[in-house]
Length: 383
Image (cartoon, rainbow, N blue to C red; front, side, top):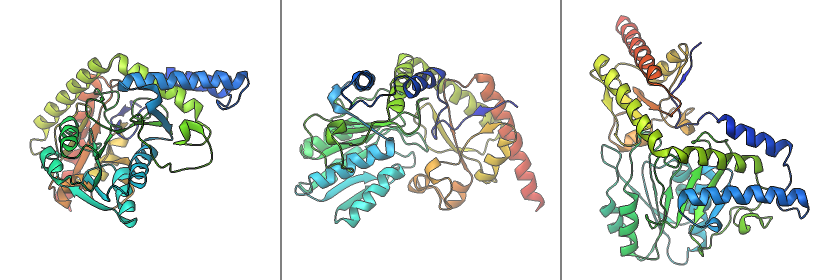
């Protein structure tokens, strides 16, 4: 059966080149990079090369890249590590209401530790007001955390403007950017954004799950989440996931080699998808309109979850929102913050593209989605 995977914001298929280098590391170059013998030294070279690739991709120094088990750990390390290390400066933190759960839940945990958090609203397109964020910064504001690209609706936050404004207001306020959904698609520039911390992940760019990285500005101390080793300068102890690290580097290099053209191509796919769906379903509503690879729409008269399962039968895979919330009954916090009603949220879908999708795939998916919607609407009317 034909398969069209349109849930690339949740995860991506690992590229063959990535799988090949991971197998080599697992089966041949299997040493522990902390070992002093030849096997250890060979493994260390792999790790150092991967760090070099990611540092170059982010425009930062190699020693500013720290490997983690993924974006969630990197977000936790950045936010908790900074808050706990600098709590004597102040206990005020700032973020938005549409951050990834690994950020929002981390801030909620810090509230239990006595920190005060300001959660900023967004507009109907999922964008935060940079000037309003800066105005909320005080002498007590320790950290501001804002994602670059939202994982559910694709809104692109004005992180460069936010970074500039908060540093003007309080140079000591730290700035963290979650760039998991933008890395490999859009340029990520922590230094130009004046970001002190930035998070990236492998499995959103056709790399392996369980591998991520944190950019930490040189000289910025963090309180580690884990203890028990000197790996990653003691910031993230524990034997490194060498296969994941090697795979991450290959995936990053491949994505970045064609980043601009892939992004333009995904934008074209999105345009074709939208045009086709709007012709067939004129009452469809777009939720936000930002990054080329993410599209979120509301289709009145259907239940998103039901449509997702119906499309599986045709080999088409989409989602209703963040994979982190897929097994929960509560509505999307992102769409709620954008002013959508629970009924609209229930009828919403997320379609996320990759450069592996063809235009013929998109046209087929549009036709099948339209057919499925009409079938579901007809069934609803008959009840």
